[in-house]
Image (tube, rainbow, N blue to C red; front, side, top):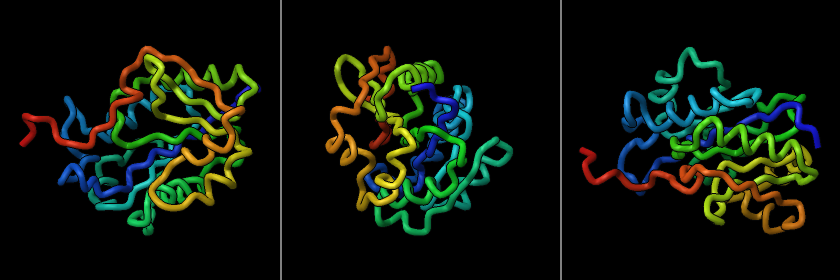
Length: 193
């Protein structure tokens, strides 16, 4: 399938309860976790990035001003990740042929890895693409537009796992050299204040 455009939904609405502080704005190098994740997306071949915020949205949105993104505030974020996916889907460009779901706490997934996933998906006939590192599945995930309704009707704190389980024959695993696809930041680093 030739993919003309892929829209990303960056899921950054959660409270980071395991972290104990506002994870999205935690420092990472000269930036923050969320800004680094976002910059990697903006440096890739994605045609648009939709950032879904919830917890402390007003504080986070200030850091994102001036970036070429759509910002959506999900008032139902406490009901789980599925509500943020549904909120973001409402703003996906009507021309987009696929949707990439990106976790806001994966700043180590670089732009070339995102491009590799987009290119592999575009060159295949599969409707779902999952990156793998040393055989382990990670994120971000790409879903063909045909899965939009199913994604909209997920419930609870799950992402696309249920759809992947229901359609194993439509899954393309894309090996990548980026360990970042299996690293998310759920606990503060040992030297963090």
